[in-house]
Image (cartoon, rainbow, N blue to C red; front, side, top):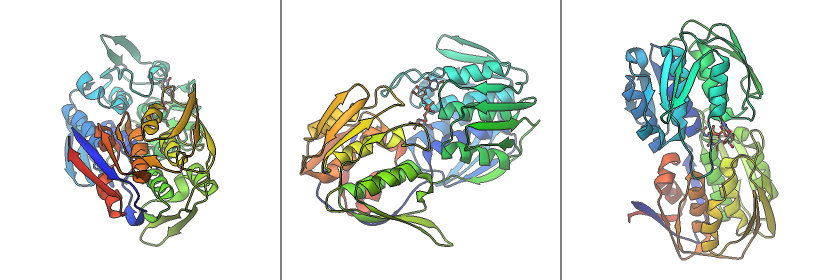
Length: 421
Ligand code: UD1
């Protein structure tokens, strides 16, 4: 299994391009299931999770062609509406096939995703929504089996804000009979990107980006082309890496527009951020001070501070001046990186869903283990500022969500290499 070896101390400078968003690409790939005409996508990131989703779709009979960041999907031969445990267990987002399969084929059999390192993560809200739309749903032998000759439009209310839940139900509703209203919908930019792709396929959707989405079902969707939005979490991760190392970097192909909560906190920490827009592309430049000020955060659904940036902010607070209070309200067990950061000399105390992080002058390199995707990113950031070498094991998590992180960080001057363990 590969590991990353980082020699800390380099100040990041220069520029890199940000890839397309994993969390927008995954549902949009599944949207291809809704039509018998081809969906052509650009700016699709080259990530293991994307590979897993394409494998899953291919197994269902979707013809997949991939050339770097361009992917074309043709679901005219869709013949096997089933997502087996072997693929679903490696990537929870596989549940996103459930809504589109049911809407297009009238049936679907999708493995239950089960728990994962950051918590139980049930899918009861996805199922509740489909039941309200008239589906017959059974959960047996670890599989969700759903049937509905044609889904009916309905008024749906989710008990909590769920991103993939909103996306699954929005896709299902596109081919339902009549109007569906999703209340308490997720407002994440990735939901909006999916809605834009669906609209270009002929769907009738309004309100995406607010907490009330209306979908008027149509008989069929047609082919379309769509460019995936930039990855705001990759953007935020690189901003944190620059912030921690007193860096000065420019990120191309992305914007501050999706990142207000993160940008505000980096400015509170003492960084200067400038968004630039040319006819060719958008970019962000960050200039970080010699030492950051501690910044407290509380995670919550968009537009509040994203849980997917919590670990990276814990890392920067480890070397900031002062004490930060970090409250995680989305997932019940998302502080696993804290014990690994402590191995690097961080001063962190955990009390339930709250972490108290007091900055130290210097972290020390050590061997640490990546426990989930964003936790791994926090260890990379900590390794960049730790004295000596940090060895990060189990980096397959990073490869699920960050495209060539060692090449991109290396281009900014980080001393980072991949080794076969
Ligand atoms: C998505 C993102 C993930 C991000 C998360 C929160 C993708 C592919 N993944 O995950 O990176 O961390 O949003 O921003 O887009 N819940 C239930 N029942 C449900 C659904 C959710 O109890 O049926 C709970 C979850 O356990 C969690 C909370 O609701 O506590 C929010 O989860 P959700 O928004 O659904 O996360 P994902 O969509 O899985």
